Length: 193
Image 1 (spheres, rainbow, N blue to C red):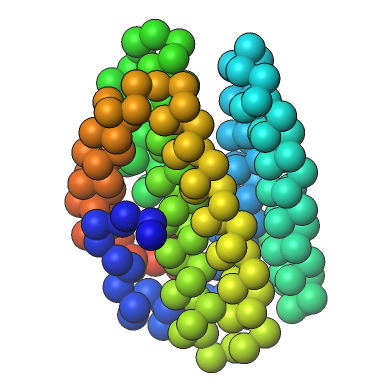
Image 2: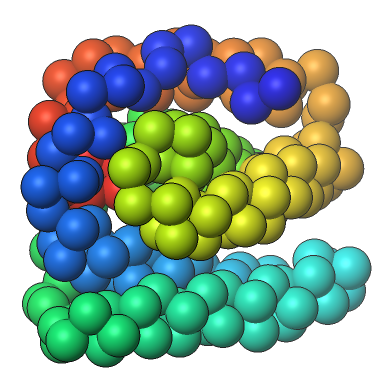
């Protein structure tokens, strides 16, 4: 369903299980960044009314996910750690050239967002199936559904606002690029790394 070209190495779950505090901190910041992305799309493209409406709903949902993750951190007696650079996202956003028309910029941002959500969904599925901590596995199962919805929403908007054939070609090329990035990752206690 997600179209990802390279699945996550299942051994990544072993890293997560040894570093739950770190993964939850990273996850909390992923939710905060998703909130910021939705706000940024509203500010940058206010003329796309349907997009704005969906992004307002997404802001509410993502910030509620941040709170859920933060609550889980607190419940374990931990505090939210400091944010770290997301190597995955930093590499991913180098794929499309800078510039172009506003529509092209919007489509590229929507495709990036769709892929980040797709990878998060895939990672959450893996955690929901493989974590020994059943409560944490259920937590990720519930979040996985949201990520899948976000992925399809962003991809749908990209196809709606751009030339569908061009968008589909860009999407496939971006998926190929993402697979190259993932070949070097899955070795750290981060959601995407």
